Length: 146
Image (cartoon, rainbow, N blue to C red; front, top):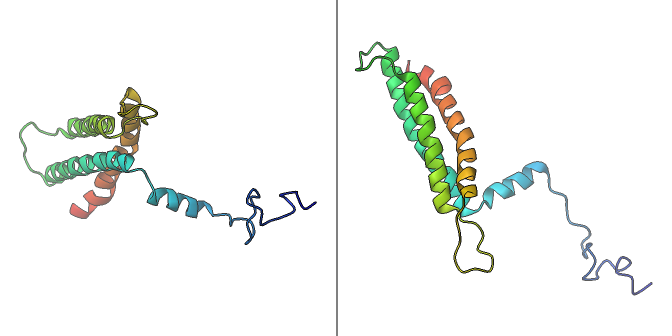
């Protein structure tokens, strides 16, 4: 059976190379490789949401700490409104920036197109980012300042 590719491990059509079968990677190795090789437009879209959420959460944290220390600010206690503005701003920014930076694949055409799916991707990526940044600001950082 010299013509059988399965019998000859050095055959180019065989999945098993001369050194043997490829090593199976662990779950962590696969995820780390995916993290290191993320597409640049997706990284830009996620970072834009993260930066906007971090800046607005820092402003919220300063406002919250000032109110908890007894400062009399105009308008009274507007923390709920402030959080709502932060959430809306992060979601809108995430959607718009992702729409602008992540085009659909070009295919056979010359220019990349954009669609509502890019904006939806940005919206759904901004939701956990916004949540996590607000949790870190209010549950981890606030006790350090009060």
